[in-house]
Image 1 (cartoon, rainbow, N blue to C red):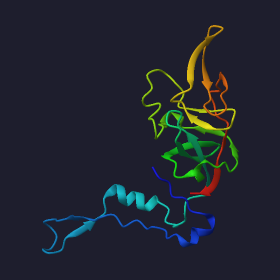
Image 2 (image 1 turned 135 degrees about the vertical axis):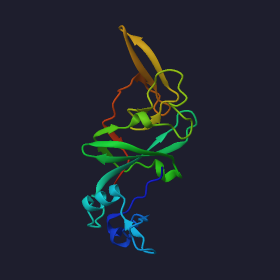
Image 3 (image 1 turned 30 degrees about the horizontal axis):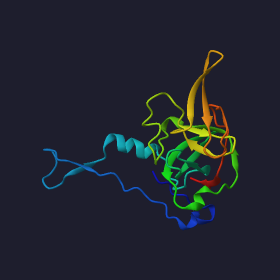
Image 4 (image 1 turned 180 degrees about the vertical axis):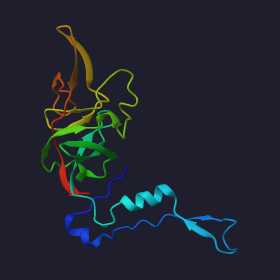
Length: 191
């Protein structure tokens, strides 16, 4: 799902879209003079219009993080967008990356990143094609994000099941952390 991002200095140039008024329902009654239909608002719509704010203001500013990752099966890049909601960054979009500029790191944001259960790699379909429980993504020590399509292995160490990761970039082989608390990418203020 594409996301439209509006810069702070362009807000005045963006027209606020007014919603059209709800359709009216025509009720014909036998006690009304002929040729004079009576119009009425649907009950639910009329109640909503009384309580809905009509200030015409734009939604509050928030922070978006646009990061890039790499498919471990095809080596192609993808873009991933998170929207800050309170103290949490929630996954909103995963798209095929367009061009080499998408892979440049612009900085790092710390926080709690949620919504990984909705992640599907746009290039290989992982974890939609996983035959066994796996991680959707891995954020490696080399500060790169990878889909978990290849490089993950389940091992039993001291009676515990652990997920191990072999990075295609830095070639490490070690247990993974199951949470991501920081991501490299571009932070953008928007709606």
